[in-house]
Image 1 (tube, rainbow, N blue to C red):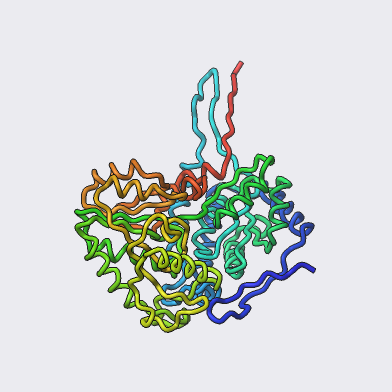
Image 2 (image 1 turned 60 degrees about the horizontal axis):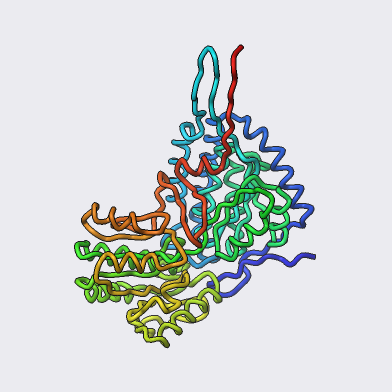
Length: 459
């Protein structure tokens, strides 16, 4: 019998949810059912698909109170922050609003001599392999446009957030998406790789680690299956000498610490001009000292546990190595007596360099290193000195200066005077080891469909 897949709660180490993974035969049959159902779904009028998908999103919103508590148990986010429905709803409404235009044929000629046009066709069955840190927001980025475009979707959710897949399936089925068209399957790694390797999917979307992304591409090698990935990040913030300092501190610290630092586009390193360095650091420390680390089920908790003890231990290891190499920790451990196990106190480090793991490896935890820089050139060189490229956050009141800096950055998204936000009208994408492809915006519809050309000559 296959080993069960368990969600170990970071709150107390208990088994919060448990599922039996499908056998390869059962999973293959489920995907075949999805492929058969996809043809009828594709033939369903676009407006009907949109209405059903949006009805599913509404049904998900009706579950939000229960979802917020489930998220606390599964991955540690405090209940005071609610679920993820606000972002899901924003993205759903925007993607629905642009669908008709994004999927419309491109008419080249319709004359007495020729009909020439390009249409967009769904890819068939789309596999979405979703992560635990934002289990609804990240999954919905691909699920929504895939379903609206006429694809069937198979969701494989993280073991850390097993219940999120159940909730998504229940919601979309309640909204009118046929059960075979949207399926939440509990799969182990070997079965997932076998399905991909047997050309079961028209597209694979994976959000997770670099190692996981490599495994997806290896499974798809030689199948010509398109694979879209969002992998690691080490997103920088840069505070220039004309920035609004208070706004920069408040936003960047929140971007580094929110969700216990477990954000795909969270701030992991900060570069501050000489003029503001000391003041920025002092203000940042004052903010972090006010956090309350504790049980995420309590309303006064502002910082919950990390999703797993091993994730917290990895960040502790990075911090310890940095301190051994000369970094200085500014947050007093005495302020956070709950530190231990999955509960990781927040930390700010100075005297850091790019020779330290803490400034080069993804931390994905409540820690940030802050460095002083003398000018834009130095900041740009440091921001680009990374294996990753998801977002960068620039702080200045001069948009022309921000534009000049942004054009020299190797990243997927550049923010000015904000961070840690996904604008559904813009493509969410990365470069280098962060991965390839893009979700949201009109680009998502293009990535989840294929072009088909029609060239008709009239005789």
